[in-house]
Length: 59
Image (cartoon, rainbow, N blue to C red):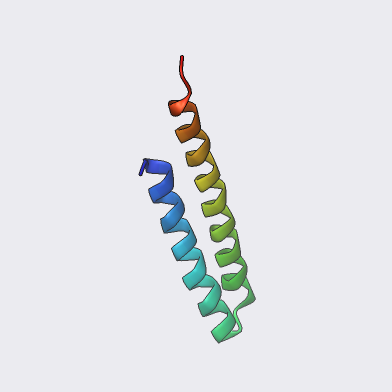
């Protein structure tokens, strides 16, 4: 697991917690921040997958 995958997992976990806390408290800003963090995590995961795929390509 490379650096991008670790960061993506952290972003998605943080986003999930923020989003849930925002929903429970009625805090729309916190809920939106959570959704943004989750999206950022998905993007980082994609970047990590691309990096992995390029490493596996023969020269």
